[in-house]
Image (tube, rainbow over all chains, first blue to last red; front, side):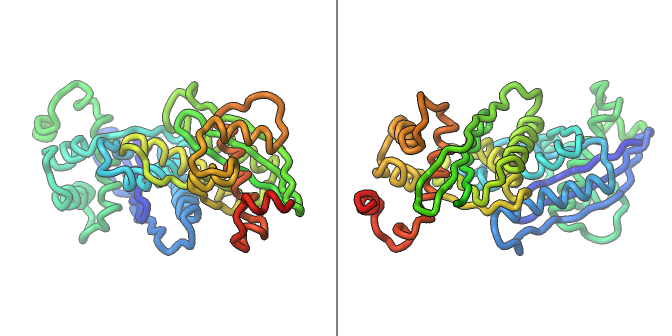
Length: 173
Length: 173
């Protein structure tokens, strides 16, 4: 069994999702949350809150690995700077807790969770709920964080390491 | 007397400069360094090193205030993301140490240190050395960090608060 934390950093809301991965590949939902920092009085206080909350969550749940989305190409310099700052705070927290970090492209997350790199956000959210057998709809950032954690779980499976497509792997189980 | 830390975050080198500001406005050099993280094995390790070193420096020198350069407009999304991540790690460290943060535009730094918002980097570095009576040339990132600290010291002077231009203020002293 291994425990994975997925993090979806953002300057306003940072999604967090934690899952357990059994030796046979079975996934179990452990925790999810969206850290909303919009009420903080200052920009440094927002980053500190992201850092502190992530440290507290990792201290509580002790994940072995962390997965975050790789930023392929930011839309514009201003949003890239804001995302970068939130990402810096989050990754600092991960490194300070001694948790290894892994990055996955958005298309890898979609491929892994839905089976198509072109899936839209609502499909990803729906499949996260289905794969983890969660009742009701998930907050969007928390769903994205769980999706990244699931992607890491799938990437670590020996079937994927052997280069066998995930669709085939699912049929064989 | 108040103590100010200036930080110039970067994904490869982060400049740090600390000065003391006497009640009469006199400046004294306390410390400067450039944290070079290019030898770290991974990107999270780089951010952790920035965070850890800044925390250690602030724990040692106990500054009351921190000054960083405001990012006016990043050149491109990729460099903005990298700068943002380093900035996020640095600002997390500042906030975690309970130090107040202040931002100044590059033109304010040039105006404050050289007396012209159009000064070039070498002029800023030369004037930092002259104002703090430092022998020999300074490493560029450390000089930028000291320049930002000096800008905060000047901004805090009552003369500037009254709106009297710095050029006039310097002649009156």
